[in-house]
Image 1 (cartoon, rainbow, N blue to C red):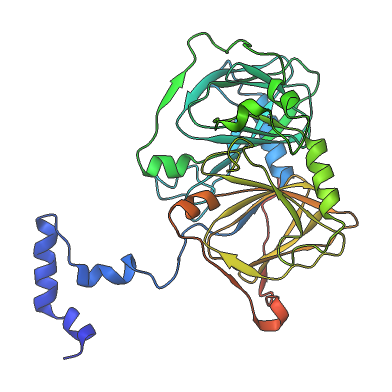
Image 2 (cartoon, one colour; image 1 turned 135 degrees about the horizontal axis):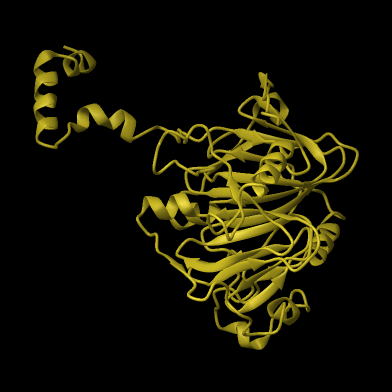
Amino acid sequence: MEANAFLQSEQVKQFSSELEKVNLGPLWHAIPQLMNHQPKPEAVPYLWKWELLHAKLMEASTIFTPDRGGERRAIYIQNPGLAYKKPWGWASATQTLYAAIQLILPGETAPSHRHTQSALRFISKGKGAYSIVDGERLYMEEGDFLTTPGGLWHGHSHPGTEPMFWLDCLDIPFMYGINGTFFESYPDHIQQPERPDDYSAWRYRGGMVRPISDRTEKKAPLGLYKWKPTAEALEGLSRFEPDPYDGVAVEYFNPSNGKNATPNIASWMQKLPRGFEGLAHRHTHSVIYHVFRGSGTTVIDGTRFDWSQGDIFVVPPWALHEHANTGTEDALLFSASDLPLMERLDLVRGETYERNRGRQEVTGRFSPILP
């Protein structure tokens, strides 16, 4: 009798049923699902339009404030492939990462708290608000990147005059999955300053040099990465041939140890020059993209996703993807990924697409939900 036929025999089925009754299980049935030949992510490629995100946040502003009903006015993106896997897949953009767009209005304060999850923020629109992280007020402008490693007190306040929007990204699903979640509210609403405003950003005005005191590793020696130096770094790299897959890209890092600026999450800013048509590849880490400027397309496993300023889209692990700039200006993409987790687990792997001169055949086009 062949192996497959034997596994379907009444004798095996009866024994397997008996095992289940005593909280045991037959590996001979489970191994095809437990040991896939390659990753089979349940997260799916998806895109959320800025128009929808903006409309829902402005609607939320008439209902919800940080002082009435909760701590943050943030709307998270929910990957449809993970939505029904509660609680693990709830509030998950990918299997390891959470992402949301947060809105704070002039005069509002979001109280300080801390948690074991690490967080980052990328400022999409507006200016005038600040985050206070570990006693340092960090004033935010468009294009700025902020990091808040786990365990640091952080809150937000807005003494400015216009609405501010930013992308939040945290390793919530990963930390939840390993039962590593701890959370604590600040005892006095919002932490007060203990250092001069933008202290760390001023200490690092020198660019690729660091204060000698930071030769000793610190959790977040630089909390605020201003947009101007990032733009200058991209401009410098633009003198050379762009990467065939990712264009011109830079990574935010912790200057005291050379590692990722945010533990467990890698953060990049990349420029796709006008006319850029990238080649397809895939890798074991998942990526959340937020379009800062410009417009273009990304083909993910044969489906074309058209994006423009403010949109968010997700590339699951081991999904073929390629970017193209279809607009009239350079496109700028901020991205957050779980690459550091893959590195720690020795799971980093990638493949280039060799057929059709490195570009996928487009078999479908994604239709986003609009307000």
